[in-house]
Amino acid sequence: MDRADREILAVVQGEGRITLTELADRVRLSVSPCHRRLRALERAGTIKGYRAVVDPAALGLTFEALVFVTMRQEDRDTLLGFEQAAARIPNVVQAQRLFGDPDYLLRIVTRDLAAYQQLEDDELATLPGVQRLNSTLVMKQIVNDRPLPTG
Picture 1 (cartoon, one colour):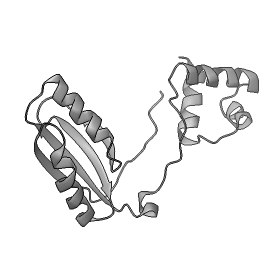
Picture 2 (picture 1 turned 120 degrees about the horizontal axis):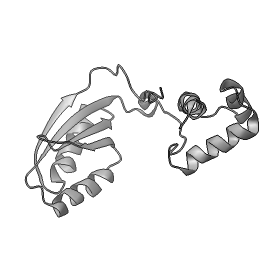
Picture 3 (picture 1 turned 135 degrees about the vertical axis):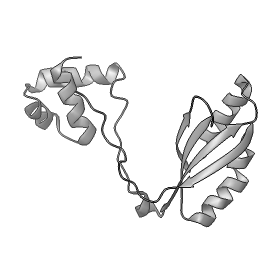
Picture 4 (picture 1 turned 45 degrees about the vertical axis):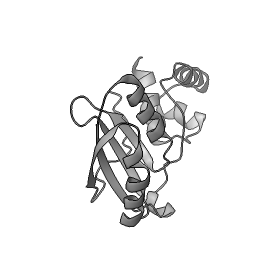
C-alpha cells in the first residue's frame, strides 16, 4: 500500500459519498487510476463497505451501557454459542472477546434504563455460558466512529 492508497482511504473514511472525480482531485490522481485503486482496495477487503452513520438519538436510542461478561466455562462450543446468540441481539452494537477477565465486552444501546434492564434480564443474562454481567453506563461519547489512522 503506497501513499496514494493511504490518501484514498483517509478521504473515503470521512466522506464515503464523495464522487470519484472529487476523490481523484483530492488525492491528486486522474480519475481512471483513482478508480482502479479504489476498486482494488474494495476487492482486497481493505474497504469493507460503505454506510451511513446514524445518530442514535434520532432513533430514540439515548441510553448506552458497556457490559463486561464473565463466562462460567470457556469451551469452544459455549463460546461459539455465546458469540452467535449475542450477535443476534440488535441492541448489541459492538461485541469484543477479550484476553483475561472479563471474557467479553458488549456495547449496548437502548431507549432508556428500563429498556436496558429488561434486555439484561430477558436476553443478556440468558446467553449461553454467562456467569456474570457487570454493566457500566456511558455518560458521554468523546470519540466515536473515528476514521482509522492511515499514516
